[in-house]
Length: 220
Image (cartoon, rainbow, N blue to C red):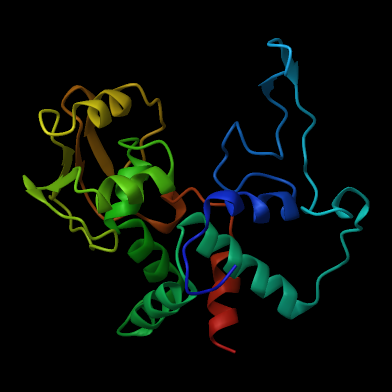
């Protein structure tokens, strides 16, 4: 996978399989067992594939990572979770370095306040990939105006919504999504509206990643 591209359709869970668990907690991740349709039309339970992809994946030993390997893995987990290119993540890190305050905390807040992240976290879309597509296809509004830039940085008080008249199918799907809303967001599910109440605290951001190791990776 090139660093110049977002995660491709077939590669979404490659890193999940390598680390043995789903980065986003998706039930349909290959690392989990789930019900599948058989050729005969019946149903069966798939075996979890919590091992690296490829011919030798099931038998491949998980070797102890070097210090650099540990830093690189945490960076990859963060980049994959937010579906970013290497260039995008490095740019956000450099911005977080500027000014006063903890770089790790500022990095996480910047990632969470991106439009695509709020659309995903709020449950307006089920996955980070669906959120990016909804934004790029102009289904998402900010304060009543269409914004098609996934990287748009939101501020407290701004309202993110889906226009049910313009995008009825997207709105109906959104209403059916059950998610745990972060404390820094307020949602009116019936109207498909989310208000950014405030900027998040680092301890409120749910992500399985050692953010300090990401900072150490880029600070080398």
